[in-house]
Structure formats: C-alpha cells, structure tokens
Amino acid sequence: MTTQSSTLGFRIPYLRSVLSALAALLFMTGISVAAQPDGIEREYRWSYGGRTWTLTYVFCESSYRFFRMLPRTLDYADYGVYASDMRDDVDLSGLVAAIEQLAYTAGLDAWERLNLIISFAQAIPYVTEEGEYPRYPLETLIEMEADCEDASILAAALLQQMGFDTILLAFLEEHHMAVGVRVRPPATDGQTYYTWNGGVYYYLEPTSIGWKIGQKPERYSSLPVIVPPTSTLASTR
Ligand SMILES: [Ca+2]
Ligand SMILES: [Ca+2]
Image 1 (tube, helix red, strand yellow):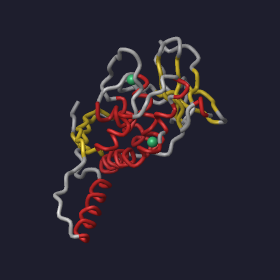
Image 2 (cartoon, protein in one colour; image 1 turned 45 degrees about the horizontal axis):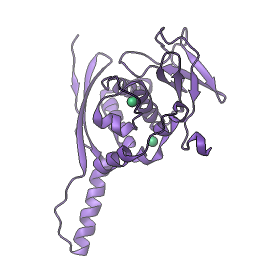
Image 3 (cartoon, rainbow, N blue to C red; image 1 turned 90 degrees about the vertical axis):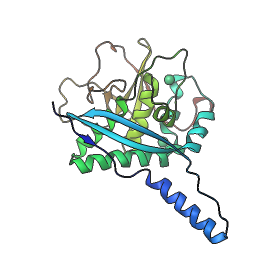
C-alpha cells in the first residue's frame, strides 16, 4: 500500500492572533518586551483511509498547566465533566479546525472528516495506569498517552467540539470506558447503539485505531452505565 503524507502549513491561528494583539498593545503603550511564545509543540502521525497523516500543533502551555492543576473526581459517573469542560473549547476548536483543514485539502467528505478525527484520537498511544487518573483532553493530547477513560474523554471532547452529542459508556464489569456518539452510520446492520434522553448513540471504541462507529469489541458484553455530558459534579447536582 502506498502511503502519502499530509502536513499542515500553519499552526494554531488563534495563538498567533493573541500574540499579534499583545504585540500591538505593547507597541501602543510603548512597552518593549520580546514576545515569548507560550506554547507546547506536538507532532502527531496517524493512519486513516490508507494514508498517513501528520499534524504539528502548538498548544497553549498555560491552558495545559491550568488543567493539570485541577482536582480529580474518581467517580466514573462524573467523568462527563472531563469531556465537557468549556474552558478548553478554544484550544480544542483550534485543533479540530487544523485536522478539518487537512481533510478539506485532501477532499474528504463530511463522514470521512468525522472518521479522520476519530482515527486521530484512537491513535494516541495506549498506556495502562497504576491506580486511576482521568485526564482532561489537553493533558492527553500533550502527554500523548491514554488509557481507556482518557481516550474516551478526548474522543468525546473532540466530537463535542465538532457539534456532535456524545455520552460516555462505563462497562463496569470489564473495567472499560467507551464513547457513544449521536450520529447515524451509513450502514447500521450489526452496529451497537444505545438510547439515552431520546437520542440514539452509536458505540465508538476509542483505544485503538481501526474500530469504526458502531463496532464494539465482543469482550465488552455487559450493559454499560451511561455517563452523560455535564459541567457539574453529581455531588453538586
Ligand atoms: Ca470542551
Ligand atoms: Ca487515565
């Protein structure tokens, strides 16, 4: 199989605009300070549709440090707060736009764009953890490793950023977490889905590349607990 490489020609447009605005402000106020980019650069490489895709992206370091400092709830029923936190929307929307730009350049259709983003999330290397440490999406993106709840949180957050409704699926017997996404696949025969709050959510396996929307590994056979997207902890709801 022949592989091609696609590389994004620009980086984090919003950070550029922020720095430009800051430089303009300093110029106007007569303050002369050398701009120190507040960025963490990461390069991603993943496969989709018979091609290899690459993306170099610069994240806002202060955003990462903010999320790194936040306390953790270890109640799986609250894991929706990690996926639905609005304070990373600017960071994640820039990343989603960069991947979508790759898709547009390559001529992918809407369904393929969705799956390109899913394959990006699935390609984050899987790690097993000692104990439990749910990561916010920016942590997973920058640390470039994830176990099942981290990968689920990241995939759900990116899909939400694209405008899709998502839920998390907690398979308590198998100690696994996956994503449900409210979208109808082109082929629905044999696909796994769950209904919640009037919507149909198809299973999405986030931990390894190649699983398509609606395809569920057989080993996750129990009925999952549905973890809704939320911005507040159960203790305060
Ligand atoms: Ca968010
Ligand atoms: Ca984790």
